[in-house]
Length: 137
View 1 (cartoon, helix red, strand yellow):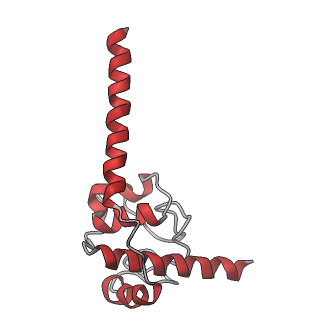
View 2 (view 1 turned 90 degrees about the vertical axis):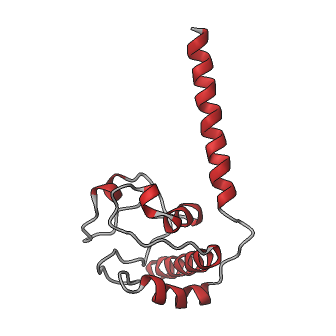
C-alpha cells in the first residue's frame, strides 16, 4: 500500500514539474502585436488558412475559446479530432511551436519557431475572434 501511495505522489510531482517546464517555455513577457500578427498571418499561415473560409486548413474566425478540431465543415485528421484542447494563448503557442508534438499524426507540418512571431499571430487571432463574437451579439 505504501508503494502505491509513493507511486501516486511521484506521478503527481512529475506531472506538476512537466507543467512548470511547459509554462516556462511560454513567455508571458512577450506581448503580441495584432497589427504585425495580421501581416505575419498572411505570410506564414495564408497558404493553407483563411479567417473566414476553410481551405487546406480550417478557418480561424472563432479560434479563441473553441475546442480543437471543431470547425464545422472541415475534415480534420484523427489526431485533431481526438485532441482535447480549447484554443487560448498557451495552447496556440504550444501548437504553433510544434503541432506534431501536441497531436501526433496531425497533417499540419508547419512550425513557427520565432517566439515574437507566435505572440503576434496569437494576438491577431484573439482580435479576430473577439471581433467575430462582437458581431454575433
